[in-house]
Length: 278
Image (cartoon, rainbow, N blue to C red):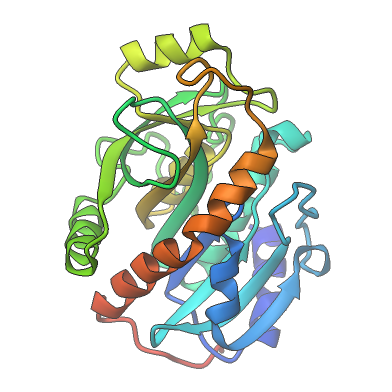
């Protein structure tokens, strides 16, 4: 709690609003942060107890301001287990967002498509996930100030927010997929055999993030909307090797469609009034 409060206090000193909505922008999707108005930008390395992001496509900074007239805090880049971070470090920003007053969290990522009906460039609303990382961020002593010992995960991805996303996409004429995301440790891409196994388990997309953040967000009582950008088809689906360059290229290609969807969802939300940080 001391670390969380120190980080939140530093951020609060610099911002002019109290954010109620948090956004985590995955690989190639960070451009949306440039649309935040009256923005205060804080590099992660300046925030107490935050590490620096080391992945290409992750700017490594916090952006606080308004987007579609909603007070938001945007994580332009995230931390991953494969960078060598602990679960505590990877999910620490979620605890800080909660301390800042965040009640709803939009989590985005770039993911490989397992469902053969998907195509690179599709957007997928996450309805559930499978944790194949071999770890859980809640292992260890539980602090009741942060959340319950055994949090319910039966509706990890908020049904009302998912429905809202589908309604906004329909209004915009954007085809929106729905599916199950499987989180793996990385950093190597999955083998074709692993992808076949995940498909048999009912998974539609695969990535190396999101699951720890969602678990901690739900532990903290934060409502979650998850959206994956299908950046490429997973190993063995198409006869071609996988690369991070393809992930970034797809993110660039769909960035406006993605931004339009997020803006539309924010515009439909109510009950989050802009207020000054105390």
